[in-house]
Image (cartoon, rainbow over all chains, first blue to last red; front, side, top):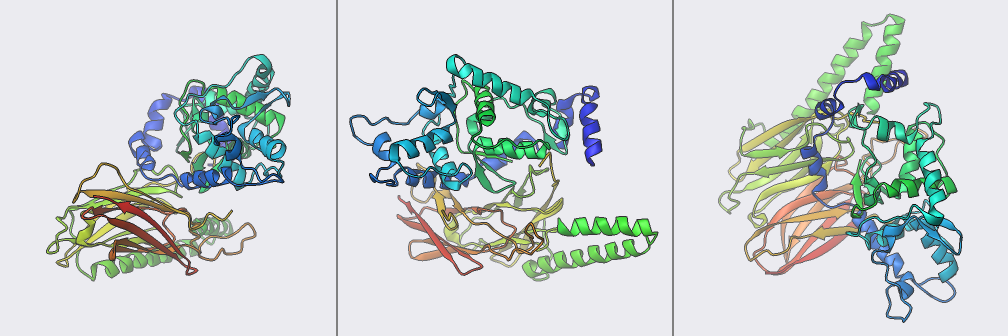
Length: 255
Length: 153
Length: 108
């Protein structure tokens, strides 16, 4: 299918009949999809690596994340359940931080070591590990108070048409949810954020949700937002808020 | 994937030049070569014996979510005793550049003749599972799995 | 942070002596088939797992011939009769001659 036909198909979408029926015969069935869930998620190996990094001594005082967040020190703050609130407003920095930004913030200010690059395997491993400590806890990100503005911006980013094909995230993930595009079901975002970070089968690698946003934007021919940038964090807050109340289950295993 | 693109480009170029006669010939040749490769792969497993239907259960999705990861399982009915067991299970995919995917040698200590893997399919293809028994008999099952460059990437 | 060669074995819980149990294994590996090309069109040399051995205590109970068509980060699952307490050891070998090992205890 050429780009022209895909675009035409999208414009003609309201005229398409019963999207559910079309999806049933043209893309993978739920029963077959379950076959993918049997077996080990390769990202579990990365999570274990994240656990090792969590205990790694670094910086001038030879500290590890575990020293403050796992130890028996009087001020140790366990991180079980903590990731459920991220992205979260940080009072000192006066901004909303994604989990990966907060981890780096901690590495830099707490451990006084060099923060990780935002697209490094290390930050992915660590973020996955910390997020997995909240497995089973419901997503609970704040969308009012100081986070309200960020949440609104996130919604605008989600709804903004831009790029070569004049698409918004909303176009495929809301307006056309349920339809089939080249044998793939277009899914509503729904509680998607609850299973990120996730292993993507087509890349054979584990990604943070903001990296997935970049890949999606590229595919939709929009200029990808920079990881860690304000609009990207805002978008992550908005998308994560759609999963509020849903149990965190990481790492995910997705296409 | 690579071969497909080249074939398509060849067809387009040939049609444009009006030299359509050349294209079908090369296509026919390519298909024959592929059939040979599969026949060879099968012969290597069966030793020339005819593979019988039955006893082998091959589980794979009818449409793969993506070609990079296709879950395939094989189960073979067998008591797995010293006297009667499955000696090997082999999976091949006709249309892959190398049809052989994996082959496992089993012993009664396995308790059950079972293999589950995640494999790659370059394009829509029959996937075949062969079981060679301790008495030398061969059983096989096959399933066609549809693969596409799906969605938006 | 080279992950290649890191492996996991998962065994079920609650099995008794002589139960047939399912072992799941994964080994992080790029599984380059040798058919792929990089961004400049140069062929990427083959680098993938070529064999897997399964040892139950001192005995090799199974071995496998593995090709590039097994997906990246090879997932392979098989069954074993839990006849006695011993380590279940899986050994992966690849095209470069690397050897990776992982074990899990079978306890009955």
